[in-house]
Figure 1 (cartoon, rainbow, N blue to C red):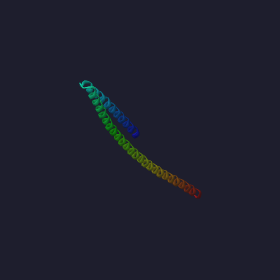
Figure 2: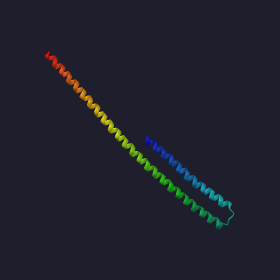
Figure 3: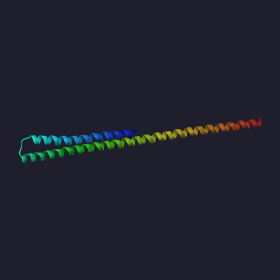
Figure 4: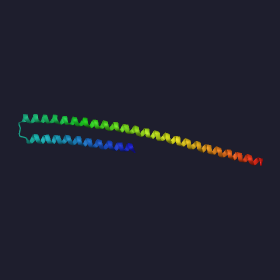
Length: 129
């Protein structure tokens, strides 16, 4: 159950990150292109502005890539930690269950042995009476 929840969170996070990055790139490109095409400049100035905008977009996408990578690493570490905790809990509960079953089996075996002994004693007493 917890693994499914973790997978769902990872998928949601991954999808939102991809959508955000794609939106940022498209929005930046459209905004830069619109600003450059509407501004009255010479060809050389326009090329310089385009080059500057491309560098700005590259820088922003690098920052976004680093942030998304860090978040992904954090999520992976958290998932690993939770998985280890769940495994330890399952092992503990399993050990408790095994101990309980052994105790009950031992008690039942002792009870059966006592009843068999009592039956033998009663049959022995009846033989001599």
